Length: 156
Image 1 (cartoon, one colour):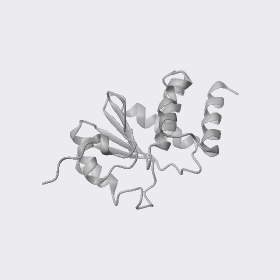
Image 2 (cartoon, helix red, strand yellow):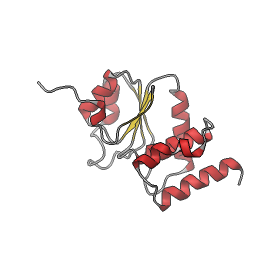
Image 3 (tube, helix red, strand yellow):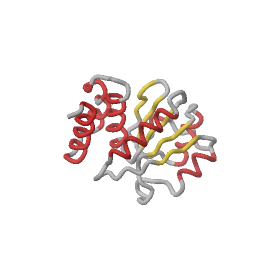
Image 4 (cartoon, helix red, strand yellow):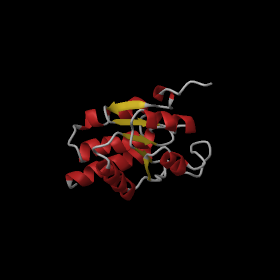
């Protein structure tokens, strides 16, 4: 009999706060560990069309565990303001629940969380984006996207 997987074994796992965790793509058995840890919703920012970075039917697997599932397929090379707004809506919808947010490698998620913390929660940018910088340094596409969203919020 195999041991229950540890949340810390999930690729690029980060316990962001008491009720918020983020990671790269969990495996099927790791989804069960997420449910057992008391998370009530999973928000997935990755695509479903690459078997290297997605499960066969993550939505069904998550719902079978009794969790809510939100899929916001963010193209890594082309994030949009609409994607970000949908993410903000999902975060606010589940604000009183334990949430797990993931993508393929916790890169999209960490960038969106930085923007959420800055634009919706009023965090200073260095603290808001600390998680992202711990995981990766945004490429030109993501740097431009993050900058444009921050500038738009400032009315620039």
